[in-house]
Image (cartoon, rainbow, N blue to C red; front, side, top):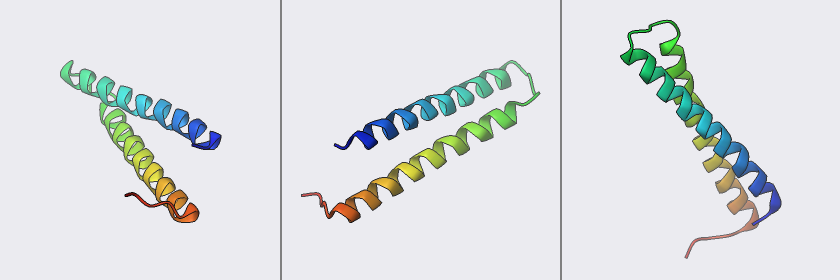
Length: 72
């Protein structure tokens, strides 16, 4: 594995944790009937996680195609 992927995975992991915390915080605030900004937290968390997974998968596919690696 190249060092650049190690760095990318750290950034992706940190952003994934941030998105998860946004979802949990929004859920707890919703359960406590605090409507100020809870929709924004939940929407932002879902968007962040979706964008991260999409970009990670696209980057992995591009890297595999560029280097010619195949599974199996």
